[in-house]
Image 1 (tube, one colour):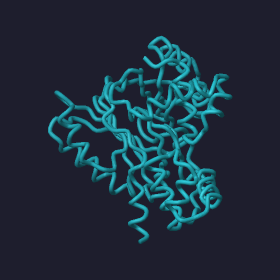
Image 2 (tube, one colour; image 1 turned 90 degrees about the vertical axis):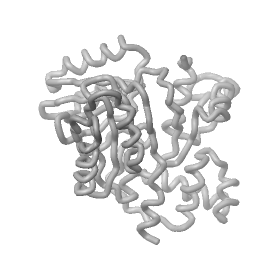
Image 3 (cartoon, one colour; image 1 turned 135 degrees about the vertical axis):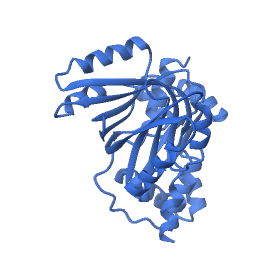
Image 4 (cartoon, one colour; image 1 turned 120 degrees about the horizontal axis):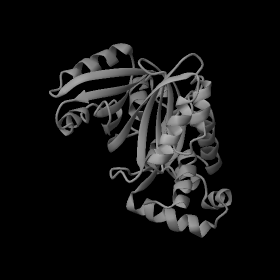
Amino acid sequence: MMDPLTKEIITILRRDGRASYSDIARELDTTRDSVANRINPMFQSGQLRVVAAPNPRVLGLTVSAHLSIRVTGDPHGIVQSLEQIKSLAFISIAVGAFQIIAETELRSMSELAQQVSMIRTFIGVSDVQVLLYDRILRSFFLGPEPESFGYNFDEYDHKLIYYLQQDGRASYATLAKYVGLSVSGCRIRVQRMLESGVIQIGAIPQRTEMTDLLFGMGLVVKGDTREAIKVLDTVPGLEFLARTVGRFDLVATLNVNSLKDFNRLISRLLALPSVSYCEQWLHNELVRERYEHTLDLFWSSIY
């Protein structure tokens, strides 16, 4: 089980994958060595990676959806078929009303309709429920969606993103050598892309073995969703939150320390006058959790 300090360090690196150990130590009131001793072994073993991820909207992937898939029998065979679908950024075997949860990023509603129809033909799939993401308010490390993406990329930006997808903590000197720009030029470009929200650099832990409790929930809200969003924003382990169109108005993913903590949160939400229903599921086995895979889609469309 991961100790609380390591969890706090990873939380900071999710938000800012290039944060220095000294800055992390100051924020958590600990020492730089304490940070390094916990995180370096995780980097070396591959248990933790820091990567750059472009926002899907930048790549023309304007339709994002949550798929709840109900299956009969063992879900692993269906998961193998789902793994062949490149647009699925997230695939999980879950415990709840639906046995598989997936997220897809596509260019159009027509593509979404075709994909859902195809999944419904898989042997063992009895139902596919679709939730459209109206607006993503919090994601694993991408943060909230920017209002617009009026950003002009060039070849140097492409090279920077490509390298940072392999090593999000690469030094500016290393980036400068690879790209062919000055150190200050690389720093300015990376900071500009980060500040505009077109990319984010954050830490992704390897979670093939689920040691933490990772829950999903869908909320039906009467009217204004701000009350429920405010409560969810107080949860340190909130990894994903989106306004949705479909059978739920909000969908969230939370990493919690205990079942007791999660039940306490559910009680707080259901006590709100605006929340009329809350459905929950447990992510039992994460099969795919991918954020940096779509860069080539953008560049293949402009070159």
